[in-house]
Image (cartoon, rainbow, N blue to C red):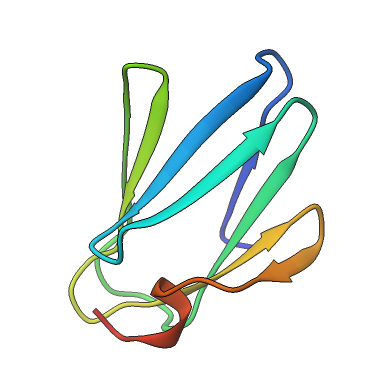
Length: 81
């Protein structure tokens, strides 16, 4: 995995993936893994605002997402942005 998010402190954490507009809800003790599909290139941008995390997928990149070890379906994983 290229990025791992662990929600160890709050009941629910919202994660937004842009530009695909995917929304993922991490409950307490959930783990979200992110695997880039294309190595190298521009790194992901991650911002925290108003109790939510926004992950910006850069142009020419895509990623697969895993919740607690299981792959989850996202619009992001279906396209190169």
